[in-house]
Amino acid sequence: MRTMGYPGEFRDAPWTTIEARLAEWCARSPQMRPMLDIVRSVLASGADAHLAGLLSMTDLVVVPTPVISPPYDEVIVRYQDPWITVETLTHNGRNDRIRRPAEDAVPLFWRFMIEKFGIHPSPSGAPPDEELARTAG
Image (tube, rainbow, N blue to C red; front, side, top):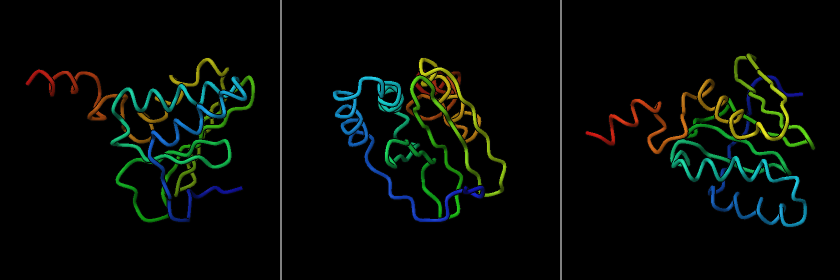
């Protein structure tokens, strides 16, 4: 088991490619829908400009952009019917893991993005009040 972040190069894929692959999987296995919902929330919010992702088997792995040289912290999302597990693997060993019912997938994902990377579900990645100030001004 890794405990110190990911040591290799992060080979991200475009979020639209991740979405397409998960949509294919959902066509065969509808229970994978929570993973697709997460990816679609990233795309809908515009936060794809601040997050890099890849699929590792059926896990979604996410890091903030720009992607730094390894080792780096990563968030891994795993779906195990009927549960979603979101886990942080860090370079300093301060790992974190939460398991919840699959219907909590999107809010749990964003909780980790905000707490671990400071990235909110907004086009700028900023908190909602800062996002409103940016769009108003």
